[in-house]
Image 1 (cartoon, rainbow, N blue to C red):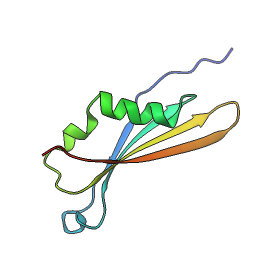
Image 2: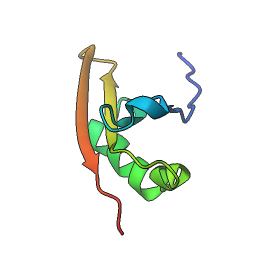
Image 3: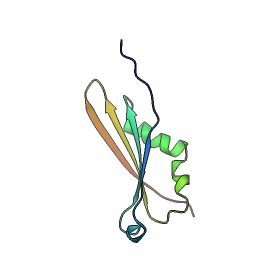
Image 4: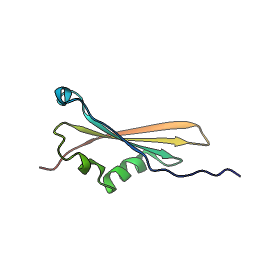
Length: 84
């Protein structure tokens, strides 16, 4: 019997101030045996982009999933549009 602990991990990568207009911030959610779409949905539901309210550059939401049976990784990337 295998026992796995579930951790909620999100990574945030920000550009240096001088590169904000060139490189977007990345909000990355990892999922184990769930879809990459579920990772993107969690980023939105938990309002992770709100933590970067003061960030003036573009943001990308990245969901990465790993399927234990197939050993496949899937990735979904979505541009986040701030409401003005």
